[in-house]
Image 1 (cartoon, rainbow, N blue to C red):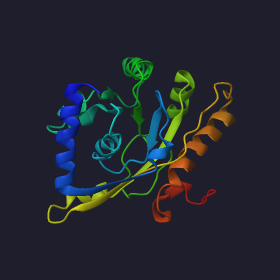
Image 2: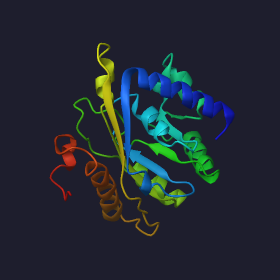
Image 3: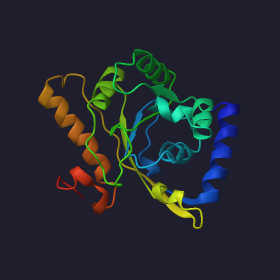
Image 4: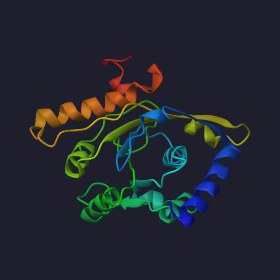
Length: 209
């Protein structure tokens, strides 16, 4: 963890605590070395909460280009080593930066829905996360964040919960379309299991705990 990242993490922690109470569950599932963190996405504060949950690791995050153009969160995203991606096109530069971050040993946050859920419930995931996990051959750590949507209400503090589940791998050999779709379903279901039933969305009717 660089001194700059440590300072910015401390600032983010203060900003978050001014607006929410943060709780973290499942840290015992966090693997050693590089890995990809996959999570639901309901607020621009989600990557911030996920990053703060890693008390001793520097975490990188892949995010839409528009996020990096916001006045406060955009600056924080850049200064913490965030990786902007242009949606709707093959952004090779973003892909190269993701690979470099993982090769350097940094965990990488990817939000596989591709955009925020307007209802708070989990939307369908995108196959890009499967391709990234196979190309980099690193573990995938499922996570779920709840409570960040309520941070928009200034007169009360939200309760934000970050939960991690058991990590898993996506074999490089599973290249057929039906295999990649099955890997995506497994990934999204792992996220759904960490959410309350009402927020599991399109994955609510699949196998659950």
